[in-house]
Each structure stands twice: as C-alpha cells, then as structure tokens.
Length: 125
Image 1 (cartoon, rainbow, N blue to C red):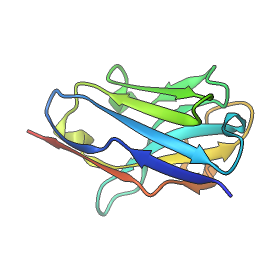
Image 2 (image 1 turned 180 degrees about the vertical axis):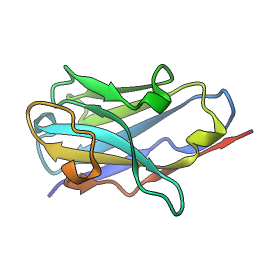
Image 3 (image 1 turned 90 degrees about the horizontal axis):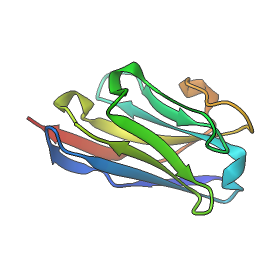
C-alpha cells in the first residue's frame, strides 16, 4: 500500500522560499509519476507541478512557472517542490500525489490514485 508523507510547509513572508518534500513508502518509488496540487477553502484542488517516474519530464502550472520547480530523488523515494518568490496567492494546503505509470506526468486530480495528508503553506503580505 502506497503511503505519502509531506513535510516542509509553514509560514513565510512575501518573496520568501520554501521547499516541500514528499516521501513515498510501500511501493517502488521509481514506478510512479508524482505531482503537487494545492487547495484553498471552498475551491477545487489545483494542479501545481508534475514529474515523470524517471524524472525525465516535468511540467508546472503557468501560475507558478519561473518560481516553482519540481524534482525527485529516486534513491531517497522523495519528490520535492522548491517554491521561490512566494506570493500571498500561493497560500494553500499543498498535496502530494502519486500515479503508477512509467511515462508521462499527468495534470488532472483524477489521474492520481494516492494522496498525502497535505501541508499548509501560508505566505504573509
């Protein structure tokens, strides 16, 4: 059974940086495409970034392009989201997700079978 545990969220000022981590256990990490989504109260969960199982392909949402970077370390079973130049609009609960596939980096919530518990990111103005 896949388990995902996120860490690294917190409170940061506008313009600051955070790095989120998500560790996968229970299955072979390198078989899974990984992604980050975020959600604010009363709104749908939005795509942030995704990376293919071997890390050869990655995509980020237009809203965070140039500021956020997704990466993975298959030796550590961990995916990262480096967030720079944070803005108050980035405030949300950030969720890690996994989908067992050997190619591609899906963008839709419905593409992912496994989810972490979420980590809160708050950007103060």
